[in-house]
Image (cartoon, rainbow over all chains, first blue to last red):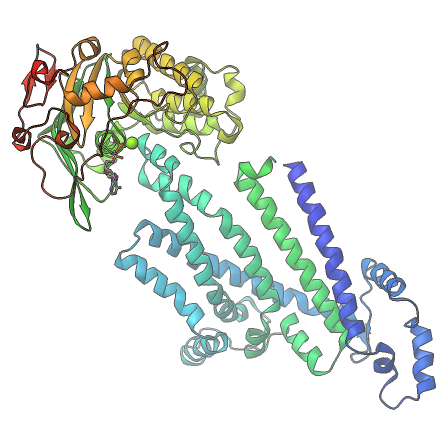
Amino acid sequence: MLAFALKRLGLTLLVLVSVSIITFSLVRLAGDPAIALAGPEATSEEVEAVRTAYGFDRPLPAQYATWLGDVLKGDLGFSNILQRPVLEVVMERLPVTAKLAGLSVLFALIIAIPLGVVAAAKRNTIIDRLALSIAVVGQALPNFFFALVLILVLGVGLRWLPISGDKTFLHYIMPAIALGYFATPAIMRLTRAGMIEVLDSDYIRTARAMGLPRSRVVMKHALRNALIPVVSLTAVQLGFMLSGSIIVESVFSMNGIGRLGWQSIQRTDLEVMQALVLIISVIYLALNYMADLLNGLLDPRLRVQ
Amino acid sequence: MSLLNVENLTIDIAHPRGTLHAVRGVSFHVEKGETLCIVGESGCGKSLTSHALLGLSPRVAKVEAGALSFDGTDLRRLKERQWQKLRGLKMSMIFQDPMTSLNPSFTIGSLLEEVYMRHHPGGRSAARARAIEILKKVGMSNAEERLHQYPHQLSGGLRQRVMIAMGLICGPDLLIADEPTTALDVNIQLQILRLMQQLKEEMGLGIIFVTHDLGLVARFADRVAVMYAGRIVETAPVAELFANPCHPYTRALINCIPVPGKTRPGEPLGAIPGVVPSLIGPQSGCAFRDRCAHATPLCARALERKRDGAAHVYECHYTPEETAA
Ligand SMILES: Nc1ncnc2c1ncn2[C@@H]1O[C@H](COP(=O)(O)OP(=O)(O)O)[C@@H](O)[C@H]1O
Ligand SMILES: [Mg+2]
């Protein structure tokens, strides 16, 4: 297991280096950072002065090394627009999005896995089709529309839940449903397909031939193997929700990083955008790494070469 | 009273072009401490028959029988829950492919203990002790260490030993083995069969050994049932069957067995000319008649069972003398 974990870690670090190079290049390619910093009214002498002062005249690899060193020390730069360190701005917003994404995935799993298991156990019956319909509605409705329906019904109509903000746990429920429902069909279908394949396998027949009760055959012998691909998909979905929560955060007025990204694009705050891309990528890779480890725990065959 | 008694078992499967009559009135019995071999070409209904004995028929199959009893229990009346109490405890089944028949996610120990604890409520330590005992019994060295290994860490032969251990951990009276050695190479094949033979003697086990290999039958059977196109065409004690085969199909099969010293390497093995008939739609007469050198128009008429001595039964319109080549 340790060798497996180390090997995957090496791969992850390699990808991380590439990601950091891409992020670094993005901003350099977006335009001349010296002009951006000096402002639109600056003379060409002033621009040159900024260029030397910030080191933009040095070769790119040297600039990358300096930038990477700063990043590793936790210095993600300074937002001239907000007049605050970028890290501070992002860290203020990250917990909101993290909570939202976590709850959304939890919601998606709670809905999708039982639906997938039931659909597989009752495949090609009305129950199967019903389960699929319940899951697919989530993807058929656009995110913002479903969010609005929730607001109208649960917020305005029944007055059960607050409709905007991120102060309490209750504020997260509707956004998490809106965001999580979108991931439900993919997870449900993968669970269903995995369960159908596994339920047809020889070792399930063995379990039945040894007299194990049906519930145990399905929940222990089948589900465990069927869930192996679901783990990876869930990690991807979670990463996707971290970056894809712009609409939901906007509809519910939550101050997460999705909204921060949108605001930064509007005010061309390159420093913040760069930091967001980097942080989201790192989280994404970390999630995938954890999914790999979890897969290693679930599937003993992966642990050996 | 026989350990297992099967009378007139039929299995129909719905097929787009009509009903597939996969098993058409099969009768046999197994005694305690006896090995019955069911032998026949691929597709003749051996697996459907053997799965039906444990109530493991595919959902699409319609199973009927005039009698289906095990140790005094009428299996036809069993509910799923009652089947579950019988399987693994009183009768077990092992399968063809040991590579795919063990759940890859669990250790050998937890697979074995689970079966034992299912039928013997009680602590894990008793189950563990029994697991070690049965692993030793199926000839596995380092039994304690094996408990912690996963199936993928074992060779095919060892996995099949684990399968046998699983099947026997609760000390059943009947073991059904559906081509248990077909996926293994020849040396391992013989080891596994000798092991089953030895366990049968030690535990007084009844065994149904399903195979397409008549050569193995000669070495390991007590009695033989020869299956063709969903019917048992001949059944006899093993020595009697080889000395005095009455059905032309049985004779054709025997002629296909390679003989050491006589069959030269590289020489094509004997094969019965022609193909197995389709079993879709109504069936009548002898199913072997299209491939039989002695067939006459009479062979399309309804068959009857004939006896040649007390334990030797066959289904042919003609006597062995008439069909002898
Ligand atoms: N689940 C099933 N669905 C449809 N047809 C089946 C099924 N199982 C077996 N059959 C058919 O029944 C016949 C007998 O199959 P089987 O008992 O597996 O043969 P054997 O084990 O002797 O090779 C074959 O023609 C096979 O195609
Ligand atoms: Mg078969």
